[in-house]
Image (tube, rainbow, N blue to C red; front, side, top):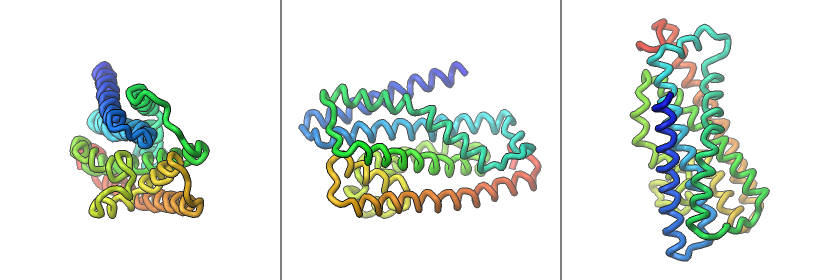
Amino acid sequence: MQSFATGSIFMWLGNATRAAVLAWIVYQSNAFGTLGYVAIGTALLAMWTGVLTMGGWTLEGELYGRTLDFMMISRTRMPVILFSKNIGQVLYQIPTGLVSFFTAIAVGRMWPNFSNVPTLILSLVLVLLSMIVIGFFFSALVVLVSGRAGFFLGLVPFIAVIMGFILPVNQLPLWLEIPARITPSAWGMDTVWAAINGIDSWATVARDWGICLLLIAVWLGFIYYLCSIVEKRIRITGNLGDY
């Protein structure tokens, strides 16, 4: 438990440092119009890093400690348990995101101008739902590969880019924008950008919200199928830790 807490503290410091560096770049370049997106993006990136790493390590520990074996004798289905764990992880990482957000604001030396706050809040809710769903996907993969959570750590920067946390997806190269468009968060971050800088078309915002919700539903359906494979595999072998 102590090492887990120590790891959390170092992660907070690392995320705050990254937020400070990016905000300093914005400050030095006088690109104050992007400060709001950078502050929100670094907060979401900090949360996403925590969801994938801390969530993966926790699940890996449960696999090796055999405490997750009790999942199979529970009346609750595996998808529900893994989904609930990811909701908990996202909520647990909110303070980490707030530290990064306010660090970026402090270094940028100004409060960003958010053009439409209600739209921004709703868009962020959709982005957080997207984060939960994509974290749910990786949780299923961690179980499927018998707890080798470290395999996914190298994917954190790439996934953060295609989820739209670094730049709006429409500003990415085409070879990155194409895979990014299959993630629901990319569409949610488009509406975050619009809410910060001004909404030109409500029809476009409504379309992006709709696509985001549709992709969340598609991802959930696919992950449910993936979890069914995991459950079936575990029941055939009779052991969650050795398949």
